[in-house]
Length: 179
Image (tube, rainbow, N blue to C red):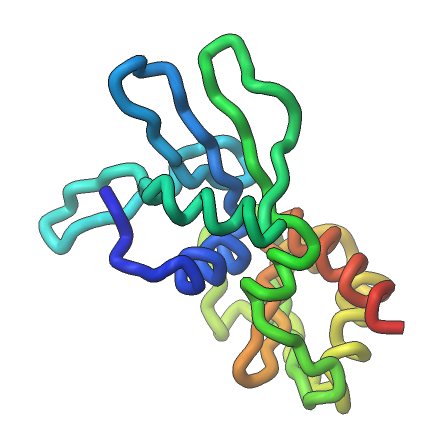
């Protein structure tokens, strides 16, 4: 199923959801480009009737990303004919938009990463910070591993959801680059 987005919309979707692209050449009649989550599951799109299908990109979108160095191949093609592409740092920055680290931010976190819901009633912490930079440093350095796995940093129009483990890695890289 194709998402009805232009290449910029896909880039934002990929960056915000921590996805990677898989060029699948296992079918000799047609190549597919799938979006997969960080744990290797297909990113799915659901219809209002509940039908679920993997998200597929048009080949032109991958071609555009490669030409602009927004994605890079991550290893050789595997034995199943699949090649993984991940966002480059530039691709991640452009996908998320420029993050203004000087904006005010809030950090919300919950007591247990294993808890399936993150309702505000169970929220352990809700702290305000003068800057996004300070909020991100708090999450990375002051929260326990369980708390960090539930953390949500919000600053209009940007948010960082730490339930995806890749968020912490990308955040540390972004903070290093902004010094």
